[in-house]
Image 1: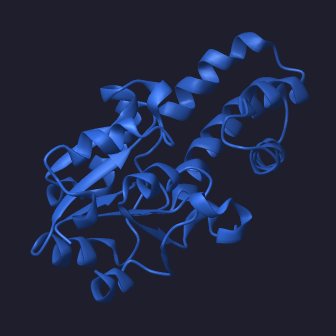
Image 2 (image 1 turned 60 degrees about the vertical axis):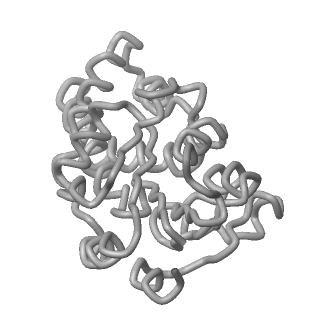
Length: 221
């Protein structure tokens, strides 16, 4: 193995830290404007989020349930995307990245609004470990978010798939493209998708290896 590609959200930090910060900002704003308790709005938002997949327009649903005008969506999204300053890496992330960077070439592949992902990276303080950081939305556009193979083909340019590992967390979209390309796929069983077993998805979507912590990578790779 020569190259290790890391996902960001839920792989190197707990995304719930970001969501809790963002949801609280939104809840405080809407509760003051529409005469609701902050805790009530926050719990409603969490319920909506947990009841749908990541593509569902949760804030549109929240506004509808609160009886708030659709025009509030701009301010709500502004508050959401202004978050990301309170995230911290998993307790073993920096130690493991430091050790792996001495032996392997480390790359980072993430998706989402570019300015938000960069803010998260600054808050996490882990940029220094990576030879290249690719934000899919910025480089290729949203249409090529995972499971698109294009970002992985880009990272494989000049590298052998058989000498590359990909470490991520989401069995619903993270592993199918690298599996097809012959990359070793490793799932870290952490974050908001940890409750889903590998057999919740089709065989070709499953990781080749599953670990419970980043430290296990030190013995695996």
